[in-house]
Image (cartoon, rainbow, N blue to C red; front, side, top):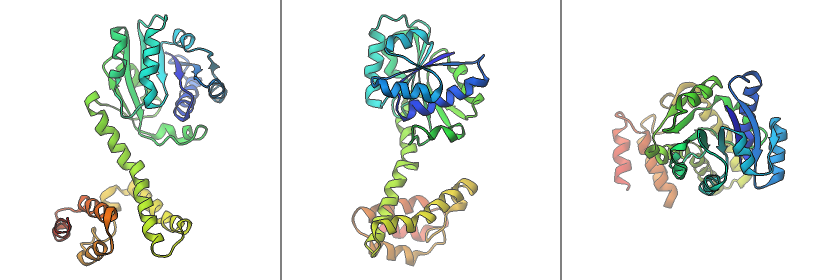
Length: 281
């Protein structure tokens, strides 16, 4: 498998380094040829970081590789795919992969049956060009697409240390929303918590520092014990009086978010709290 990457942002750097490091000891399985980007300096930097080549034009990279990863922002994937489809390069037998969580492989449909099209997405927060690859091998991944290379790609990522699950194109949006709930929206909840603490006299900086150990310890307990055993607080102990006080103290979006998320935490033993939350709609 000769791999090329189009796009030299955080995902391109991270995936490219992950693949190229693996290739050093598995040359019989794959070779990472290099990068192309509309920003030449970014592509040169990515090539240096991964020990691969810099390509001055996209057609040359596509011609040189049989497997091409589009590690560009979601809004650019369709345009890049169209450019490749309209190029003079023979695409017969090539595999096209993008790394969007929300978009499906249908975006490659304009290339027809001559191409195997996939979306492969890591359930991982890639927030750094140079550091995110370090623990990248620990993440789950998903693959979606109906080409001829499915098992080969699954085998590759499993050998790289990943658990990889196959999903359908129709599941992509809901799948990606689940990741947003567990990642991006958690930051929104944290910001809501710091805002409430600021209203109690804390500076914004103090509020962030005060809540961080609580947040980090909770995340660690979830990883160690699972969600159910990690849960603490008034809902977990059936403390109706405290939940009522919270609802009285809150208003607007904070009150509604508190109510909705508390309902998610209720179980068969939380009927009294469930009733209070339903009454407060």
